Length: 318
Image (tube, rainbow, N blue to C red; front, side, top):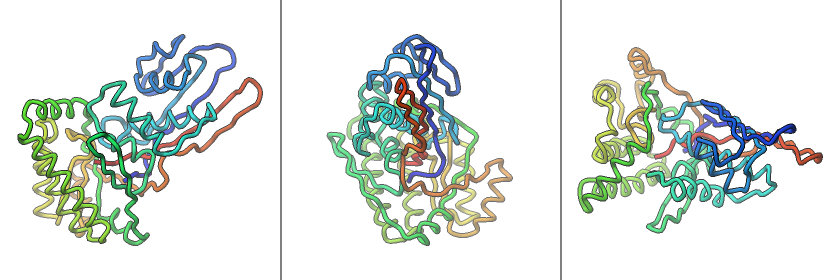
């Protein structure tokens, strides 16, 4: 599900020089795009034939390394903004695949396609990815009341821990290569089957069933890598399941830190009070139904000058 926590990307073309300026948690100023250290920005710009004379700034509602797809949101947002600058719009599928190609094929990151697609499509979206990498997207439609109930019962808490997704997934992928048919493959196949059951539960508005399946999903996910679990989170998880009616939970994204999702149909205020006492505040969110979009696009005829801002909602996906 795409949520209303955003990555904003602003693109500007300077008047007086041809430098490349990039502003994120760091600032870079170089003479050519190929010299940028920020690999996502570098490859996105090169892909569209931009080599100099560009300025890009980004701000985010959530920090990187929290399991809600911020890196892919940044890339999707930047590609969308570049396409607006180039007057070269693309379909949602083309935009999502372009982001996937940069991260998976060019940069060889050991990740999947879920974050890029959710950043583009938004909403509550089911992804089926075949062995060739082709993605089938299906919107899971809920009426307003059902969606509100689902969000109210599904809590997100920040664990105050950040991690590098690629480190977690690299260990998982290595274990998969070394033991075909072993525990990692068995767990992944179980997670796939649980995904189908979760989609059915959501479409049937059986959200408590979703919570129970999420617990089974977490048990399978923990077997994928030693870097997925956080001991203090595991202890709290067993406690809230026993004392506050939590049916299921998981660490969002690859695991190892970031946001912790809990499904709690009852005792919600008590749960929030307890979690706050442990230094974990609930993140309030709503679904982002539209996905990535250009929210300002000012083209001026002289010198092709452009100012643009693009927004991508957090993927919040698994």
